[in-house]
Length: 441
Image 1 (tube, rainbow, N blue to C red):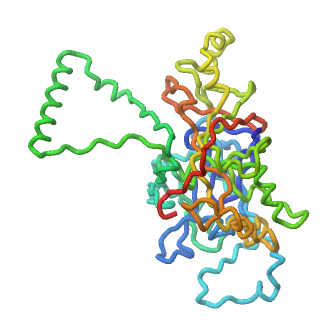
Image 2 (spheres, helix red, strand yellow):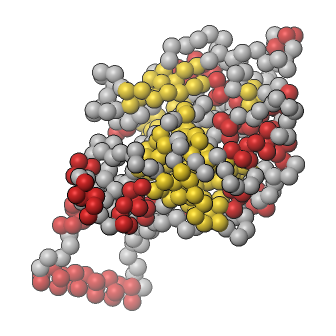
Image 3 (tube, rainbow, N blue to C red):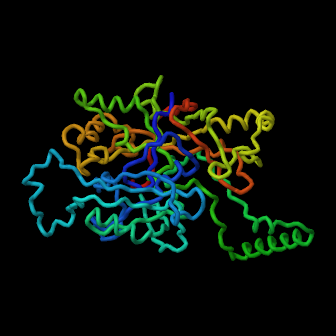
């Protein structure tokens, strides 16, 4: 098999960006789901709620692209911005003229009338200085996190396009918990970084060792007396940004062909509707074989490059510039394997929703058969008892951090590149389908 598509979604729910190659790390494709738009519109409790395609198909009217920052936009060299373009909705052929022009009842607060005019593109820094931004608590699928409001002019731009108040929030240093136990099963726990301050606290003399012993004895005595000290922080666990449930979503072309075969001749269902991060061709695999994939290994090829600025070294204590032919020849076979391959741990199915039925040109449900994709999948793809009312397409995945090697001298997390055309092998299969267990989702 080979990688046939790579996608990133800097602002959640908007159209994705197709990439020829991508930097990937423990939190997914670089820049993925760093931002999310929220609104009180259609919220029963009138609280800020996530906007996603299933409930706000109008989000499909926005496209994105990643470009270099201009002078005055960059915090440092190499900074990027995401440019968001608004595309006024085309006429939906399934809506009659008299229905489109009909004045809605005053009580219909759920109706959305998108701006009919083009707006200048919005440029959003991908690495904003969030220390000056206002914090905002966000709850996404029951996994809360503190984000940061970007404020104006970003809120104002989206609000003008949607026709109601919208808030743009940045993930910043927030970390959302992965709630499903099955979803994170087998995913290596990230190593906790040791700061310079921590290193200075390590006992380095007889006095310090003795002091440490005395403190430990005192704590033990307190416990014996029924006085318990404050619990230590729990061990680190896998975490995500504004991605729904995992850093990656993997889909297969073979199964997409099965979906298109459910339509009339000449009607093709595009892969972008399933909003994947990594697409593989599925060559040599049967339709829906991915239901049982437990691990994929992506051979990154000889063209993969690393640099101190964008991709930390994957060999301990070596910068990219030090990888001379001599150094490479001295590396162990295991280190070379870590450089040339990426392991993805596929832990759970992806249950699909009405976003599959959205027409990206009109921002509404698609006319005809393309507005029935979810219904046609539901006939025989409700195969996960943990989400028995939703059909399954694709698998959620995590990066196997053990495959990345150690941190470099600067403490940067390992990041590698994968590209369209890279070879993919199924290196572990599950005997049975996994069962969805993210609570209340």
